[in-house]
Amino acid sequence: MLKSYSVFGTNSNFRTIFTFKARHTRQNVIKVISANYASIARDKVTSPEDAVKDITDGVKLLVGGFGLCGIPENLIGALCKHQAKDFIVVSNNAGVDNWGLGLLLKQKKIKRMISSYVGENAEFERQYLSGELEVELTPQGTLAERVRAGGAGIPAFFTPTAYGTLVHEGGAPIKYDKNGKVEIASSPRQQQMFYGKNYIMEEAITGDFALIKAWKADRAGNCLFRKSARNFNPPMARAAKTTIVEVEEIVKIGDIDPDQVHLPGIFVDR
Image (cartoon, rainbow, N blue to C red):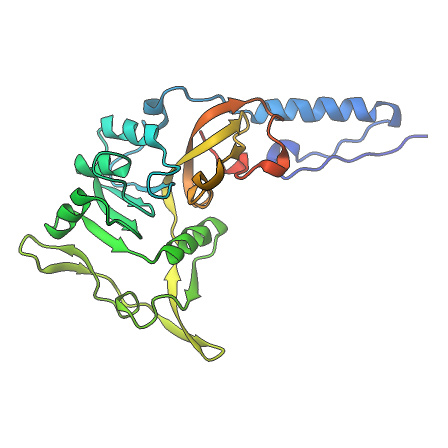
């Protein structure tokens, strides 16, 4: 007697239904799955410079990390050697004077920062107050949710955070001119009441490239982060058109338990 067995998957490499004779099912399924895993494996990029070579002027970069924890320092270093400039950078922090995103600021490669806490970077402060840098300050939780929403395909959401402040009312200085006057100010947010409580609307954030730091990744791009270094990295990866991951160790497919995968390989491009 013949039996039919079906193998399904969300990956395009699995979009086939296979029917086998009962006595051959297990062996054939193993061969099919093994072949398809091999086809989705990504070859590692050994040079940070090669990984960022197609980043051009004016792109929006989503950069993972919290302070100096979990930042893609080698990818940032490669961008310092790259000719591209005028980046719009989304990151919780802006590094410090001589490390992290502070290195890009020092070379004046960043046109606008969308950040939360930036108080430990003297060069950041100098550029902002002198009119050399545009800054969009965003509450930390709101920043995290704007990026998460972008990766989830949600265009906007309502939050009670910052209701009644400059974030809500608009007019917060984004850019000063050389005379210290506000040249670009923030726009007011739409407000709405739900269940007797006031909320403001925030738009999602997406980007052209995400620069991510992970602890381990397999050849299919499945990533594992180490403790608090995970922070903003997974949502940033999901919200970008192209995601570049810097990892400490690359392992074979299957070496990372599926239950331990923090960022599925479908979100990783290189």
